[in-house]
Length: 479
Ligand code: NAD
Image (cartoon, rainbow, N blue to C red; front, top):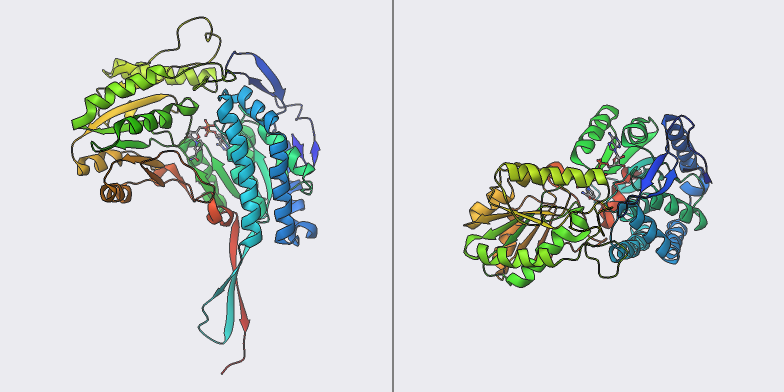
């Protein structure tokens, strides 16, 4: 683990994490896991680094320069970072390399935000000058999931550093290596030691100890809704700020005036890319009843033609699930839907044949013959499983689309922009795409309504998440 600028071995009492390649079941490597003592040491080091004058008084252009250098070095090491992600979570090579570029771009973007975002002079109501400046919390705890580790880590580390904090990053136990590599890159880029400590470990042990630590004044978490709820309970007790990016069950809507071929391609990409292991996966497809059968035929064709293969094979469109346990969980959910009467109209099994039999693969799956209250339509599956649901009127659609505990994202396909706008405003979701899907920009705030989260990452808001406003009044002569 990386603490105080040094790579150090784990606690003897804490079993190491064993990283397994989900494409073939082979062990990649072991990584030290942090126990309570290591977390305490990392947080104390970070707290000390956060108060160093050299960091507190570093001017925004100097801080921006370090962030830009991190971006450059990530690009230099792009192949290694992409490979680390691919062997740990099984994402296809094209997606891994695109995510490295996106993570580097995040550092470059926050270098710009850091250097250009000012404080505010507020309208005066008396004999004073009033202003609001933004100050760091001190130590931020960052906890990330396994599905897109590097992009999530960049999305937290870059704005938290831009905002003047020190960070203790706890990557997912399934994907510990990209975070460690990022920590070493940051040191090479000139980030003073201790400002980014990386402590892999389990959620129950390392994650919980980080959230509980009294010197951690803000936690930024991306992961499942239940874990988020547990973290929020601790935060309530500590009266600590949190940013929570949680799960989703996003509706992807097709009206009968849409370009159906384009819509079906996008719906398939929206759920099957990354084997459905994406928080914004469009996992519930609502189709206007007038075109339901036609859309179903097209969708089944697209789902069955997707190339499921080893992640490093050129042209592979879907790799394995990130772990064998997760594949088994997805498989069990599909089987229980089948037992409850759902129709599996595509996939619904592991790929046939010997070639992929050693990996955690699962076929693109489409489920029909259910309504929105079915368990499979309500629970986050986080796998390549799409539920197809018909709708009749716009009113019926909005009620069904909003009929979930989640509110992360939604997609709408229609030729009528007035309708697109109306439905977008009626949907309970932090991001709505109209005639496109899964476009994500670092300059645009991202986060969830309802049980999909609290707070917004990305954009200027994404840096403010890691800062607290301080208002200062300067007395002025009267009259
Ligand atoms: P998870 O909640 O099991 O784990 C996420 C991280 O939290 C891991 O690092 C884990 O070790 C840690 N953790 C777990 N319990 C903890 C606790 N009590 N205290 C502190 N840390 C704890 O989620 P996962 O299985 O790794 O990821 C999949 C989930 O993440 C899905 O629900 C998905 O929708 C969500 N996700 C959301 C977004 C988003 O931006 N909204 C993005 C990606 C993934």
